[in-house]
Image (cartoon, rainbow, N blue to C red; front, side, top):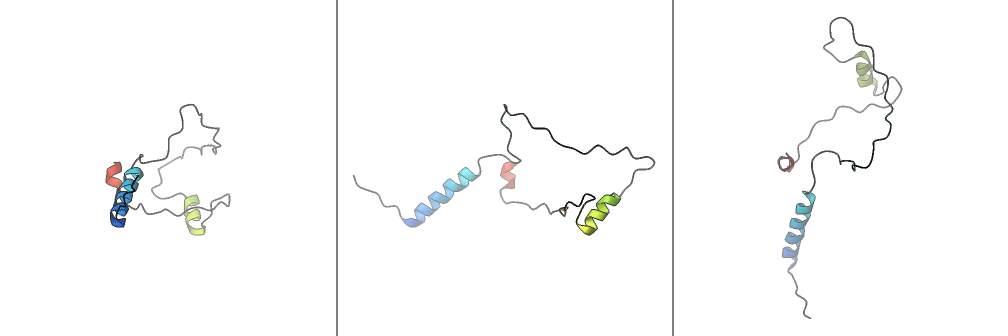
Length: 94
């Protein structure tokens, strides 16, 4: 049995095409849960009472404090709002 030798550039191109084809498989967003699995209990904080009077147009005082200090009222670190960056293959996922 004779082995066929493939030139290195051709093998690199073929491997790149295979990689990109497999990388494009999927869908935008988080993975879906299997239909048989039920989501576990989620601990949520009680909803704040509805505001009275005119609606505020700016961030809440708690959000302002968190933005200044980097920590929320419970002492947990707060992430800064990130920039939504684009990806060159995003149009394929739309």
